[in-house]
Structures are given as C-alpha cells and as structure tokens.
Image: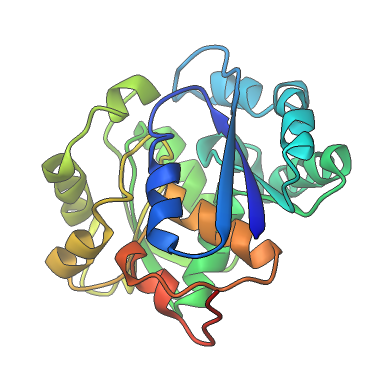
Length: 243
C-alpha cells in the first residue's frame, strides 16, 4: 500500500480524489485533509494568506497520523503566487513540518509537463488575468515555455466547482494554440478527474489538470508509477510499474 497525503484548500472539487483513487486501480490510498482558506478569492493577497505556513501546518499532523508517505499542497494559485523561490521555501517548510517528502501543485505542473515531453504549453485558467499571468511566469522560470494564457476572470473557487464538462472544454479550447504541445488547466477547484480522456480526444493533445498532476506528483515523490489511461497521457508514460 502506498499512502499519499494532500492538503486541499477548502471544499470545491475534493471529490476528484476518491475518483482518481478508484481509477488508479492499484494499492494506492489518497488521504485529503482540508485547510482553512480564509477568504475565497483569486486575489494575490488572499492567495498569499491561503498558502501561508500556519494554514498549511495546521493539517500536517492529521496527515502524519494517517501514515502517509508524501504530502502535496494541492493548490496551484496558493503556491505559484509566491514565485518559484517562494514556492520552494513553502514546500521546504511543509516537508520539515511533516518530516516527509513534500511538493505542491505548481511544481507538479512543471514536473508533469517535463514528463510528457511538453516544452511549449498553453494555459487555460479560471483565474483573473493578473493571477493567470503569475502562473505563466512561474512555469517560465521553471523552464517551460508558455505560448498562450487564457484567463476567465472567476474570483471564487466556489464558482469554479460548479463548472460542467462543456465549460471546461470551452476554456481549454480558448487557450489552445497549434504550437502548444499540451494544455494546462491549473485550478484544483475545477472538476476534471472524470473528463481527461474526453478532453484529450476533443483537443487532440495531452491535457494536464490540477488534481490529476497533484496525485501524479505524490506518486513521483514515492517512486511509484501507475498505468491508468483513464487519467490521461500523463499516466501512460514508460516505465510503468503496476501493483
């Protein structure tokens, strides 16, 4: 059994995690602990507070007691808003508090893009444009070329949680460019776990989504690879290790 821990901000699309656990079809357990987000707002000051050390560390002990082997801060905006160096410091503090390997969804996107060989990506963000631009800047600093950024101006995670497949697909299509080798949808409040094969079929290229890459990143931290085609191209890379 591989046990993975996630600190998830508030309550939005956390039901993606039991869905992903089911689709992994192996001896992987996903444990989600909810953090207090403060104000639900895709605004820089609110995001900095959401990702602050005291809010994250409050949930760490619960994950440690659950026996997890790695911890991921399952929030993209609450990590990239600190910039690359600040996000490294955030993860370092989380690892020290947990006594475990740790990462965040922002780093998960950078690592996942590299895993599938996507050097040029397009971003379809639910966020306002200024926040979406910070994600693009983070990825560029991490070594991934961003060819297009599409913001949606949505201020709250609660609104994003209600989006259906057609809205998710419309966002991805609006962001797509011919030279983009993958499309990134960065909000963990967005339900995508049930949509990945359909998105990749409709867009004819790999799609990376926040909760998907968060789980992949946690597996990476524990040196596990699971072949799960229903979770998209990212989960079909060689070498494959299955339970």
